[in-house]
Length: 309
Image (tube, rainbow, N blue to C red; front, side, top):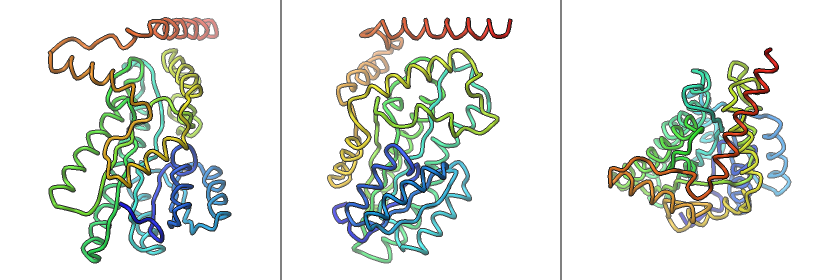
């Protein structure tokens, strides 16, 4: 996709992090911008920022885990701006903990946003994009699905998040092949950030009331603490990575990474699979991280036990 001016970008998770940066880049390219987010105050802030730049904006509070809300967004987008040219299935939440300690509602929440949000986005918008392409031979479009390096690796104490992002990578790769099969004029990109400062480590602030939060398992709280520290210390900013994604859209590039040096870990995983080896130690290069995680889990577990005594 080379031409952006006057076209329309739809961005879920548009109230913060990558979504906010995608929205600003789209506005800077003179696109119509549709932003959806579950957090109304963040959505209002970004809408005001974009309108101050002169952008045409449609902002809606949307829970991407709800198919009917995404469908309503697609209907309103088409009624307001016509065809969708650029779709960012970007909304996401983070959660960790030992895989057997996550509750059913933890799984439903994370998969609802990270996986079903992508599914709903594709089901509502792709048929409309294909219809636009059929009606206009000059139509070109692009779809960006935000996954993670966690979609290519399997770090311990992050199972619920790993599962959701592996599924997004699989969907994105299959989407690429499906669109190629029918020769659709729609490009695809899977974005795989690593430790980039965004609001994802604070995802619990928007969690439903029945999803375990601050008082949950020691492993989950330890992972939240470790992730917040790792993400907060990241040197690549959300704006940096968003700009990289837009260059990938222009170049019709599928895989995009914020930290390409981390691909060595992906290569190790692939060698384990092909060689039928047991999974390699993810902490081989940084055993201190394993030590800190274990210590955090033990400390929090002791605090919880003390509080319940």
